[in-house]
Structures are given as structure tokens and as C-alpha cells.
Image (tube, rainbow, N blue to C red; front, side, top):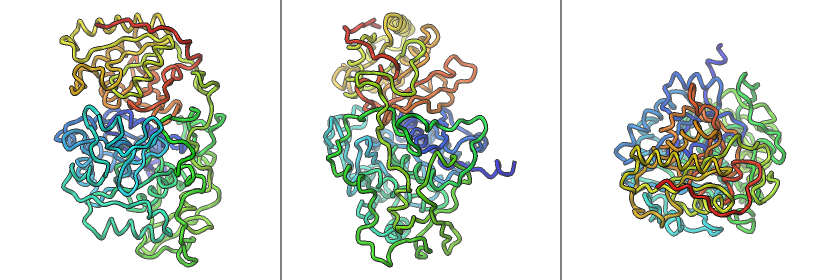
Length: 587
């Protein structure tokens, strides 16, 4: 009992949309940490109980789509509950494209709310997610599209986002438009410094200025890990804003440094025995990855091949080789006292624990002496896309059994990638139901009845069906409207009817803002990872006690996530032969 009472979460997070929340959950899962996603606001007592069974607990919210003046009532109670649960780090999970504005989903406001809950320390912000084609260099953010990396304000999709178009690539300026707090940055040259000097530079940003937030660069997975080590050294409990890239770096750092503990009864450890998925980073079930991400000829690939930096110019006496760090270099306090069994996060050798002059314990590097080696962690480098598919043309993903019954996809996304996925499915024998969210009777009982009937007809005639409100950004008559609540309610109605009357047990929801509305309307309570299909595409199992949705598997994806043939892959089995579109028509 005393041991259970002493347990604390390794990490907690609030996701500002549901799809981003499942991405964060997936990153911790890949590192071998047990995670649970909640769709309702938790209380501290509930989180304390969950700490006995999980390493990470996240709360999926909708702040990204909220007016700024409503964010505090949504976010602050969750952050307060997470803070009381005592995790090592609490992350505000933001999108890797940093899309937000002073009026909607303000990240500046999220910084302010976090400081009100956790104290006035500068808030680290890390938006990069290299495996998804998102990079930050010298404070400026970049995003890939169609294999080309663009400055964010010139990226074809994000620069034309219907709600929060990105007009500024410098994240310091972008955030500065959303808060009066000054915003500084730690650029990527810090990662080339000896460990102690890098820590001093970061510590200086936290203590020597009046920064309200600090943007951290990253263009490789190695940078993510180095940044995570710095962030974790910033205090006993740290609040940070970041993408799934930050989740990835934090997960690797936490999983490696947590002392081993036996598995807890009733909570299965993620399966690390799948072919092509070695621990600790379980990788994806996909093959070559998203076509958005540049290929191996890029400098990113070269940097990864040679390992993390943190070594260039290190003098013989200037490295952190396991001795006590300088007194002005902070070390993280002891991390939570439980973790995965050794096979879930193997190490290349013991790390050295160093007790600093203030009594805190720093996790030191291995024998080479620089934080680069600590960041490398002695294990395999990230297994981004280890091949597990039996065929490129929609064959089954290894370990993903075929769905029981047809698969339903509902989409409120305007993203070109989702449009391509919808067209692929329609071209391969899936049914299609087009919904006009701007129709005069949208959301009326009659319109919902028509939607139900059309959806059930489509599912009866095909291996799956797609209910969608748009085929790209130019297909809505009123593309600047944001009928989010009406769209979410209608698509949730289609899902509920399909589960109740068509035997659907596997569902995809496309669109970050849409997914939050749909999940809340459905009344689901929790989600846990079932399978990882690729960046931003985690298949989860819903928990909805005493309801028909309990045990339904759902993939909640952002508009730009996933390969073009994602929907047939979610179904498992054969992807279908090219055929004409089958439209049931909901109008």
C-alpha cells in the first residue's frame, strides 16, 4: 500500500484537440510507457488512482477551436488537476504546425494559463516534429507538404487554413501576437555545445531574463531528445507547450531514466514483439512513411545517421563525464519510481547518477562524457517507419486483424491530404455520403434522418463508407464559415447509428477540431492505444462503460495525417479493387 501511495505519474498532458492528444499518447506508447487518454475533465483523486496503473495520463480537450476568452475555463481546471497529481512534466499538447491566433486557440493564452497554475517560470515551447515534416530553426518554423519543406507562412495548407491561417513563421513573433509576455529562444547551436555549457545557456534563459516563454529549435529526433533533457532539468515539475515531437523526446528520456519495476496487474505492457518493431521505440506499422516528409538525402537524415550532436568543440576538461556538474547547472530531481520492464526500454549500459550540491539528482551521460551520449541513450535510434505491411497497395498491416464488420469514416476536414484519402477510398469500392454543413436545414431532425439512412445504405453495400463535408479547401460554398458544432453533432449521429445498426466496430474521424466535437458528442470516456499505423494515425480502443461504444476501435486523425490509402488499411485485409464511386447521397 505504501508503494502504491508513493507512485506518481511520469507525465501528464492536456491536448488542445483530440487528434493531437492521440498522437501524444502514441509517442509515450512507443517508448514503452502505459498511457490512458481521458475525454472528460478529471479530478485529482481520479488521477491519483490512475497513477497506480499508468505512467502517463492525458486529457483530450478542444481549446484549439475555442475563442481565447473561453480557454481558461476549459484548460485551467485540467492543468490544476494534473499539477496536483504530481507528474514530472505536464505538457500542453499543441499542433506541430503551431496554428493558432489571438482570437482562436491562442497558444499565448495557453502559456499565460500555465504560468497561473504552475508559477511564473518561463514556459518552454517546442513545436517541431521531424518525423512528420515539422522543423524549427533559429526560431522559425517549417512544414513539409508534398515532399517539399516550406516556411510555415508559405506552406500551401497552413497558410490557407480556414480558421487560423498562418501568416508568420517566426514562432517568437507568432506567439508574441498572442501574449504580452516576452518570448525568447534557444537555437540549435546550443545542441553543439558541451553538456554543462548547454545547460548553463538554457538555465540562463530561465533565470537571467524576464522571458515568459522560450522557443526551442529542433530539426532531428536527436534534437528532440536533447531539448527534452534540458526541459526536464528545469525544475521538479515542469510545464511545457509542445507538439508530438516534444512528447517523443520526453517519452524517450523518461522511459530510459525511470528505474525498472514489474508490470502492474491487469495493465498489459505494449507489445514489443511485433516483427520489425524493436523496443524501446516501437515504430509504426507503416512502410515508407508520409510522403510529406523529405527523403534521406536531406541534412536531417545525415544528422541522424551520425547521431546527436553535443560534441563538437568539446575540450578535454569541458565535458560532463559523470562527475558533479558545475554548481550552476541544474539536474532533474528523482523521477517516478516505476517504469517498464527492462525489455521495454533497453539501455546500452548504466547511466551515471550524480548528486548535485543542492541535493538533486542529475542523470549523467555515459562514458563518452557529453550530453549527446545521454541523448543517444545507448539504444536503437528512432524506428520511424519499420516496414510491416505485406503490400503497398492496401494489404494488411502486421498485427492488425481485419475489422469485424464494415468501417465508417467521418470527416469534417478541408485538408488536401484527407481529400486524397477520401478519393482513394471511393475509387476502391467504398461508399460515399456527402454532407453539406451550410444547408438550410443542417442539423435538423429531418436532415439527421437522411444522413442516417444514407450512411446505413452505404455501409450495407461496401466494405466501408466515408461521410464527408468537404473534398479539400475549395469545395465548400462558404469556406470561411466554421459550423463546427453542427458538423460534430451530425457526424457523431452517423457514427452512433452505424454502431447500433450496421455492426460497425472500427471508425475513423478525420479533422482535429471535428474529432473533439464528435468524441464529446458520443460520450466516450477513455481511449487506449491498439495499434500504431504511422505518425498521427493511432488506432485506439474507446472506453464507454455501459454504452454501445465501449470497445469500439477509433482512429482520430488530423487533416494532414496518414498515407493516401489509410482508410482501407484501417479496415485490414484487402484494400479493395478500383471501382466506381458509390454515393448514397444524404441531401
